[in-house]
Length: 513
Image (cartoon, rainbow, N blue to C red):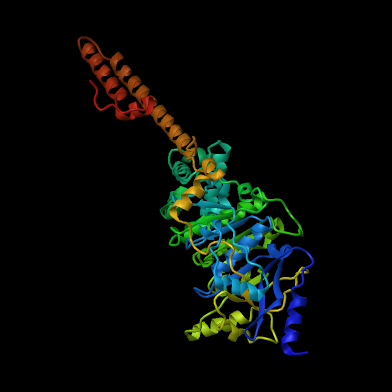
């Protein structure tokens, strides 16, 4: 048997699927592509997570697009993070090209141009369905990790959440949280200290500064109502195809704190909401996290631990996570070790550091008698990749240089008119784009403070009146008239003071006439 025949046999045996699968492309050896040695990904292993890596311009985004399209065709909903703004074209069919036809002839997969059901989502004021979550839904533990607070400050946040829960003070947005922190060391200090323990003003000030940092990155738009429901990510169209939900993030690339905050909250919500699936034949939802390094670069150690835990546990919910980045080293080892599917596009060796990174990357893949992995990594063409997946028994498949199939949808963005039509035709836009500002902790605590100020002003006025009445009763003769007049003036002065009027009447007169 020739080495080429041995290679084809190894691929055929390693990538055999009895259940449902996705065809990724055709295996390559000695620059030849084999239509009878196709690379197949079993659907039942797609919740084992994965990595798509490679240098800029090597085709990572198109690979992501191919996977999303084929998952949609299998009825599996997808969530994509679009930081570069080049994924919206999935909603329109590919215009086709002679080179696409040539590619598909080589890999033995028919090409059919088609658009897919797409929902455009946004965290900011861009066009799309708005994504929001309330502060209460985050809870004190997750919020503490996002804000990267000390252990003492995390305890204070726990007290604040407990106090607001006990007193029916909804924490919906960041203004609610800031007001509750201010109240805890101001007007409500004695009340909270008596029931929950003392709170340092210095610590609350530090927490508020970290909240302001989140606000400056656009968090004030994300925290609030109406909260996005995870079920709305799991929809299918009338043809049974899964929706491809695209979150447009082009305006928050320089706001990694907001991006990591959103991602962690979304993963936590998915984990807490979706039921256990066990070892199912297909995933319920697949997420692709483009520019994944933005999640990890500025994350605290506590936040990284939280992400690693979610990656480990969320698989049982039937959810697959796929990290898309330039180099596998962008992903922490604890997360990288959990990834079953690996698609590695070309890496460039311009420096000694690059060459070292390529050697380390090559060690992450199964040893192959047919390839020098480190050498192949630098010679892959656009739309080619080294691939290793898990077979139906969860075992790594043989390493295969692969010519990847082309996207069936447009490899370009939607026009402004197409995007507008897509957003306006969405069932979710009307549901989530209405801004809701119901009574919450901010308003309720302000009302509580005003009542307290009014009560204090009233007590001060009564005390002053008693004092003046006592003086009046001890006065005699003609001075009594003057004393009475003095008493009336003193009472009028107190009753017309700014503090009393603001507290008791809720307004501040400019002038007493």
